[in-house]
Length: 249
Image 1 (cartoon, one colour):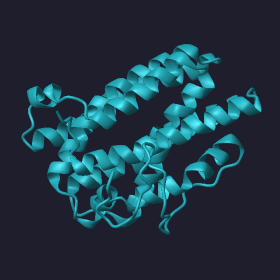
Image 2 (image 1 turned 90 degrees about the vertical axis):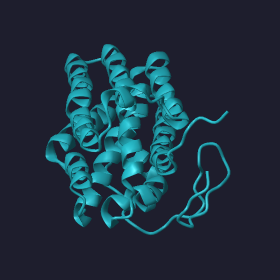
Image 3 (image 1 turned 180 degrees about the vertical axis):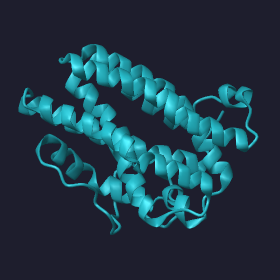
């Protein structure tokens, strides 16, 4: 997919990155999650440089593209909640199962509330919102999550789900430093930079590192690969919204 900001990309299906711009590299953690973040540090740097993400603070993100993103993200959250419930059923600890089930509810209630409030202010009706089909990248990403949590062990499903949590938190914190003059964009930033959201992210990070002690080296490599694939899908999701991606004949 071509970039409009002049950063070149390899022509591969998973968007392997060719040029790594300088910028924030994200958090510092040890254990398996530290290795995971090191694997995707180039993807995260590219994420912060993407025109959609930059546009949330520099005033260059057209409202139509944010609206497209909100509608698609609402569709994504339904599938994400379903995947969390499937993952909760596989959790080896009861407290993890309860936590993931709560996260599924919160994703639909809290995040969708923000989406719907903004969309209503834009004049987008529930009929339009609910009648919009998933864009191709959205469909591919959610199918990846649902298939992984359904068919693979708990640790691998958790690894696939983790980038959605973690990358949004790190993006939110980074954008919080810059701020936005658009009140809707600032509300979005505040939600993902907030302590409540950060608490949920830390919960799943701790699950991942606790579960890592039970994994063989082969299983750890698989978890890292799934985490990296989802992180690339996260970049592709921003790019999908920037291009207002739609199905073609």
